[in-house]
Length: 235
Image (tube, rainbow, N blue to C red; front, top):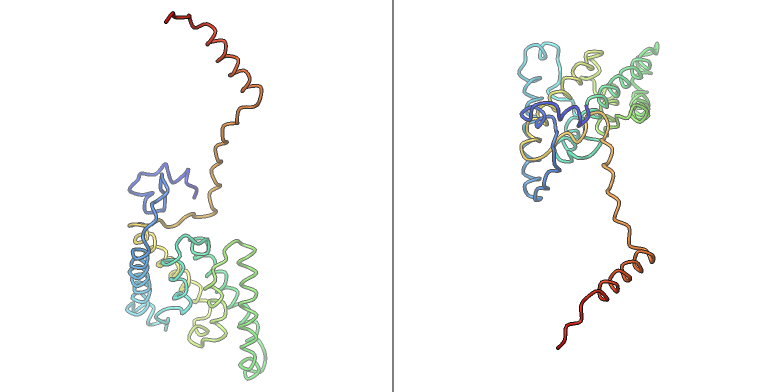
């Protein structure tokens, strides 16, 4: 979603989607720190509230929060201008990493010996994160906390038992974190900086060319000719 498209929306809509006609004035550090604290607290509380108090998720033994989202909060609420914190990286980085971690760990679980699988979980975890990094690089969705999302199926038994249900849990967690960021980060700051890709920089206006020797001599000749035309006034 480019700025040109966002600009067509009413201001009371595009403001909350990160659009600004002019570059926002930077806030003092203490305001940035205060907003980072407030928004991170609210964002993580919303995610945990959904999974901790919803019978739908409690019946499916969904954990209160996927641990990697604590690191995502640092980016989404504390470093909101970073390319790694934008919605594309947040949503797809976590999803691709969760999918990678599940696929790799499930391949390891096909071993006929369960004890052998348990002894090689460390290898599945390392391989999951390594592959997830490459996938995020290829898709332009690099989000560092998602590296932990990839290894959790191999290292966390609670996540492993979710099986493929881990994917919608990750999607919902990312979406809720993004929604809180859109609401609270745009009160005095701007989020996101871009949705799909950064906007191309505006071309800088070229400075006016300095007068060359020909122009300078022409100006001098004009000045001398104008002096010659002045009438001689007797003293």
